[in-house]
Length: 505
Image 1: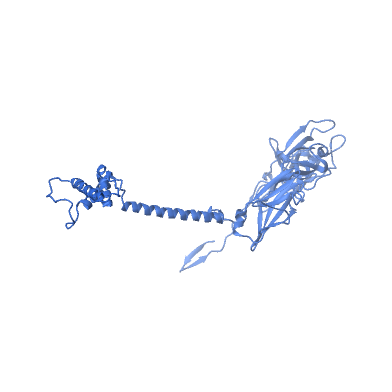
Image 2: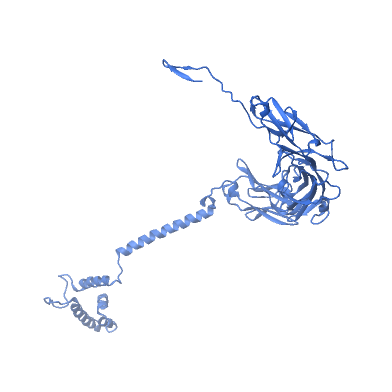
């Protein structure tokens, strides 16, 4: 439609419908809408079931196959035509074929009125081949279970090698899928190459077997590395007769009459599930998953260690209690140990916890990170125990006090310089000389004062005073014979004698 502006408004045209008519190239598909199999250098293939008789020829009793002419078009196609080896063979959207079409090709045409009947679009040619459904002939399961490394009751120790083999045949070339049913009932692919990527050994034709039948041996090598290999194994022989799901015998979901049962035994090991925690208010339960066969038997073969304190099932230490060890119903040969914490304390995240396991084949210790389970801070301080924090605070305080003392000592030394320094000694001597040899004006004189001479030093005055003092002392002690005083050091060391004489006087 279109719009036009008129007097401040808009006017809409009446709508016009565009009808695109087309017809794309048709395709031949099976009744499930699946395309034929594309084989390299051979083109597209569909297969019809061939049940061979005693003469090796396909019998007419085999199942027939319905094919459809699939085409995208508008309007829908109303006219169809089938061609066998390029010649018209029928009409309609579907056609049913059997063994009579083996070795021939088939195509289809479709029209919705856009093309002339003589020029209708044509599909690609599809070759029809005989289909002998894949089947399992034999396997080596029973032989394996009766020989080494298998023990009684299908048991096998860890780290052993198991080589399974299945002989199958069919046409087209069969493929094999290896399946495993776990103890909990889940069906999964076994741990070996599957389908087209599998390991095969083709067997040459022999006896009355038709040359069109392909017979081969499929191989599956298992390295029993953990307890997840415990289960029921079988092989399924499959035929890929279209682009859809393969046709298999036995089924991919259910084993046939023959299968291999594996029961792995060995030392305890970690489970695929890591330790976890269940929190309820101030309480919590730590769950530790482990696998073992045979199961560690309490009380001695399964122990929780908390800061080197061992707890057996039912025992407690501080706020920890080893509740129980229960079977894990979802994983074979695996169990869950439950450790209760009531109440949860801040220091619990620094505990060293481990689950110690043991059986007749060996032992295992599974560490438990309480910091990770309780959501501890990743910072180093957040993980540091309280007493270490107190120690660090004390060390920091001691360093602070030492720094203050060092600053005070440095200031004191700065205010009182070292007397051993030459400059300081000189200043001290000057002060001493001034103190001792320049008495106040009114003080009594020991000798007559003379006018100062040029460059007369105070040292000369010092010697005169010392001589006078020595004379007076001798006179005074002469009157007291019982007293003995030695002042020999006065003359030998004049500078130090100044203080000595003063002390004596």
